[in-house]
Length: 320
Ligand code: ADP
Ligand code: MG
Image (cartoon, rainbow, N blue to C red; front, side, top):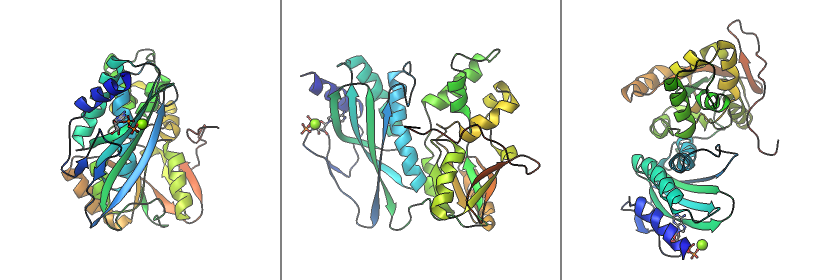
């Protein structure tokens, strides 16, 4: 049956099996050995063709991204990834697509030592649901509700590239092939900030990953923590490609509300920033201090003179 040939195609390509997988793909369910001193951290995310990725996205990039968005959620909790489940709905039994998809998925899984332990394969409009499981020492998961007024607000990496790739899908006038490719890579192959999330267990009072846009996602932290957040828009970190290719006046909208960044936004007590910066530099990672938690509610972006910016929209929402 085509279904089982497809599952075999996936299984062969995702061969990495961890020692703690007692029973993987092939039975009615997987069996996993969970260490007694750790907590299990679990999340799931669905990608729908044409909604979460453009229809022309390659099979390998879809495979990579479907795992990446889930590992980004684990990173935001400070968890170490371990296992994944893959529920794949396909319009046709296209072995070439499935092989490419599995190769992209496996490439990222191997980088993070993740075992694919099972899933489901069905026919219908192209939709991918991945569930990931991670591990963390008891009580150490990073939450959205721990920010306190006076904390500094920081973000990893750079913002706005993926949104720029979508906006300038066919390249803007004069955009170099190289810049176009580097923006596109941020959209198609996001790098979940797993190492940073683990490091932040010792530093952050709250953490979230940026999928819907910086303002929208910080809004969740502000609401959960019962605080307000002020962002200095002049400090928003931008990649060389974004600086080169996107006019200055168009950058803040992409960086504040574009989404698909899969960076981490987090809060830290200000006196801990120097030690955090040292730890981050040792791992050659980039973080930027771009705002503060204040008494009150909501998220405001301020210009260099401290005046509020009017963002065009506050992030992606389904059913909006
Ligand atoms: P059942 O009918 O008992 O639910 P399935 O026939 O759906 O079992 O799946 C057979 C085995 O293949 C199971 O171990 C399941 O976890 C695995 N599997 C099915 N689809 C996928 C997939 N897309 N990726 C990984 N494993 C899969
Ligand atoms: Mg089944």
